[in-house]
Image 1 (cartoon, rainbow, N blue to C red):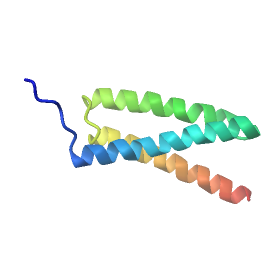
Image 2 (image 1 turned 60 degrees about the horizontal axis):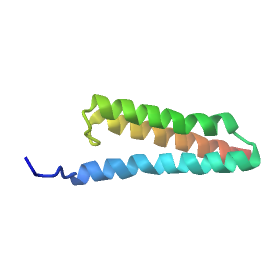
Image 3 (image 1 turned 90 degrees about the horizontal axis):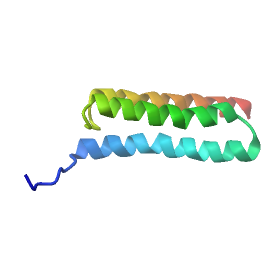
Image 4 (image 1 turned 90 degrees about the vertical axis):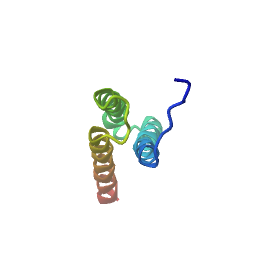
Length: 91
């Protein structure tokens, strides 16, 4: 069993799709620490993502294209859309 595990195209897609909102939440944390706005959300969102992705990947047995992981990724895109709507409305 010397074969290395290879990710499928769908698994790559969902890994990248999950990384984008996480990186944006880290960006928001940096902006929030600089400006002082949305501080609690900026601290909580990356923590929720780390906890959520960890638990869903554990329940999905490490498969990033599992339905649980897909729902978790989509959930964070919804949070991103709500955040953008909040920012646009504030302008």
